Amino acid sequence: MPQQEYEVVTGIVITIIVFLMAGFFILVLVAYINQRKKKHLEEKKTMQVNFQQELLRTQLEIQEQTLKNISQDIHDNIGQVLSLAKLNLATADLSKADVLQQKIEDSRRLVAKAIQDLRDLSRSMNTEYLAEMGLARSIEYELELIKKTGFYETRFILAGSGYSLGNQKELILFRILQEVITNIIKHAKANLITVELCYEPEAFSLRVTDNGQGFDLGILGERQQRERGIGIKNMHNRAQLIGAQFSVTSTIQKGTVVDVRLPGPL
Amino acid sequence: MPELSLVTQYMSMNNLSTLFNPTVIAEWIAFLAALRFLPQRVGVWRLFVLLLLATILVETGGWYSTYIWKKSTNQWIFNILMLVSNAFWIWIFRFAEPMHKAGRPLRALFTAFVCFGLANLLFFQGFWVYNSYTDIFGDLLVAVVCCYFFYASLQEELFRDFLRYEYFWLANGLLFSSLGSMVLYIFIDYLYAFKRHTQINVYGYINYGLNIILYGSFVIAFICRNRNTRSSPG
Image 1: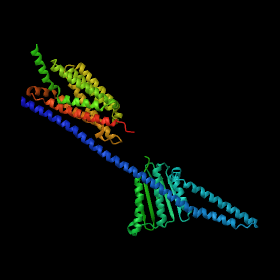
Image 2 (image 1 turned 120 degrees about the vertical axis):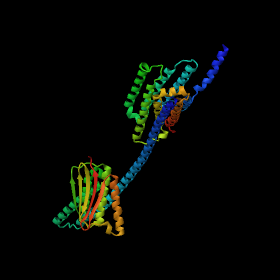
Image 3 (image 1 turned 90 degrees about the vertical axis):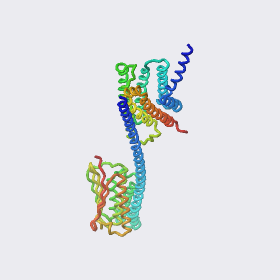
Image 4 (image 1 turned 60 degrees about the vertical axis):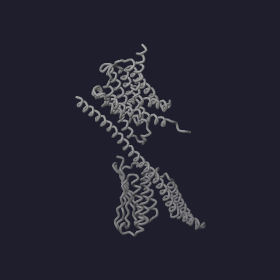
């Protein structure tokens, strides 16, 4: 009987120890998960800070690019138009009424054009214009500016009913587009730039196509490789920041296609 | 009868050692810590002072009733204390930030425990026998509440340093105490019988250990509560 009692009590003590160990296991698990949570939150915070920094850098770059465009536009377009108007007025002969009338009319038309161009420029100088106009309209306007240079033919294709991707995402997408276009102007030797925006419920895509000489990173010179590589990496990183997929496909003598895809609202 | 009086006095002094067992010492330490670290500003935690005072009074009253008055049972007073303290522990978790969304389930558990305890006290085990069913049920509910508290804390968006969080220490002590006590009271009859036959107080030793963990955790929780409710300078 006492032996049996000892066995029962030993069993009870072991059961209690097992229960206490279960409690201990729960605490260890809670502490472990809490530490992982801490690490995860720290990483999330760092990512948010990086994102904000990148966003700021993107804004600055867009402003810089816009100012460059404006400077070029003033020099190439408005300056030329006003010079022409000035020349017209300077060469006006007051004795020939019909020629004078024509020159005044031409000058009036040129000044009106310059005023219209200045209006467009003043609109693009507003740093909030992307947020106000939306992505599609901003891209269209950017293409109009490029077309005005006379070196490029541009096409803009909009598919699906547009929706907002959010100011931050649109800002970064716009900056990627600007970078792609700068690369085309610098390296591609193209004369046709096509931009397609496709708004589908499941996905949004931005595709920029040129008909230039294309490239193959493998056969480019070291410097070109480095420049292109860094440029593409920058765009790739920016796309990653907003959760987008980024791809570049290029064929020698046929051109280059840059694709950016984002999950849609659904 | 001076001789008898002397014998009684001697017996009383000898029995003092039974009053100041590890559990009661731990309760006193927790009570003094509560007095020191739980001023007015700590909110509902101030009620710990009352609860611990009641616990000490009940322990002392129970001891006095058994060893001085020689009453055959002092269980009724422990039954009431156990009912109140378990209900309090379930209730106080309502004030933990991670449990703000769990107000309704906590109310349900609280009500279920109080109803069960009162029914057991009035109709089943009664006043004169220790209400072990109520204790086991209470321990089970407290363990569930503690585990849910851990879960809710981990689900929060913000990170909490558990080592400085009073409710963590409260849950910690209560979880160990309730898991141990649950098994202890399921087999309480075997352990009492074992003590009678062998004079080995297994129940007592385990109970002392669990209470030291419980009240030790309480003391740490009180210190954390004190620090966390201190207004920042300036």
